[in-house]
Image (cartoon, rainbow over all chains, first blue to last red; front, side):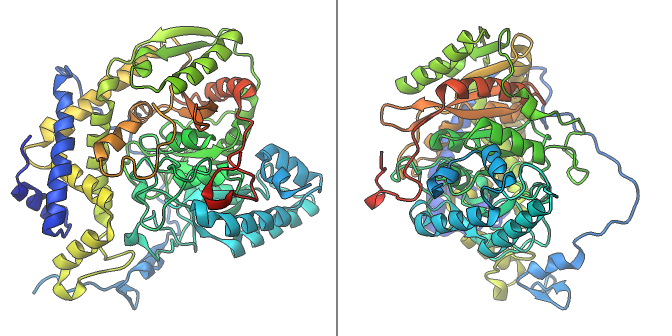
Length: 94
Length: 500
């Protein structure tokens, strides 16, 4: 598996991770090695096998439609940008 | 009675002393807090010690016992929680700078259950950042060392949870296990750790790593204490949609049961050439104990074991890259680059505050989920995961439990694998299977290595059959429990050298 540095840069943008050139190179080295190891799975015969997303069958459970007390706005108090009951962020639309 | 005496007791033994008023929780808690303040600087098992909260809880417990209204066996017992588990009003960091200063406004369900059983939460234990690691070296805050030999890792990711129990700083802890993060450190530190069946214990309020694999479980010095802790935390929780709505059995009733006739499977793939000779010999001794007790030993096959690590690191990193997208500087923790606009805020905050291993896994997860690679990696891994689960289903048609080593080697040195992520991942080869298949699995000590480090034996059970694991583990413990302690609990050797 060939991993050009441009691919690493693209991934870092998709993952929203700012990286310097040294970090990108280190990441290129590590990912190359790990993804090459992943190629081992090509040996497995998966013809006709259904993908498994969960270890146990998961159904969407339903509960009664009742109002329960939640964390509410207290949750926002942990934001670095907390002000007047809101989490303030930089302008989204210029 | 000296502090050494009561610090080494099991939960049941301490509960009895508390009940008979031979000890009180405040006295025990004070002494453990003192031991932590003197010794933990060298071990690094706690990220936060809640002295005030612990003493207040201990005082309330003593008052309950004095008034005859004890909440049960865990009332007044000092326990620790992996710092991945939310505690209302007490900082929860996941050992990451990106969550530094985060004070949860609510308790995780497991925290609430332990508190309502009267347990004294003594502090939050160290871990690999976001539970990503096998050595605890990825903690953003401090190294955690193995109490048996301070030059070695305690294993990971629940390294602090294991080290604090081995060091007698508390009577038990909760860890989490996504690919072996309870069992590997339990094995390295000579304690007992259980990863319950996926869904047996609520994950509500536990910082998510890989949601289809994560599970919370107890880490203790003995099997009975482990059963008592699982009893307190197991059960359905409507706030976790993956929690299983099934009756919780009496786990203590499984202890001391006759093992005659139990069918124990030995997977031939778990005894490959890669296992160190002393580890193999110790696990074989555990098998002999079961055979002598009348268990029927059978060879079984888990033919897809060689694909375990690759499958796991695709599935887990994919889920992690999605789960960790919530850490962007908006709602929790510090925020960087805000003045350069929203996108830079995301990138700078995540780029500078996530550690290297977390970034590596986010990048891997992003890659295997990205257009063009999804089918080749993620979808394929999900299919191999099913083959893996079917291996176990077939094996459990023939046996009641599976036995093997927890890890190919005892604890390795700090720094030994840190520059080679793939070598680090391969430590998880025997533990990953139970996570991929969602099965309960336990590690307990079965002897010491040639260089006097603990060796763990792993037991894997059928879904929701933790009871059989407790029965089998109890039988092994009776014959092979480690009599040595890592060091005299109140006098750690000079220069961090183990005192034998």
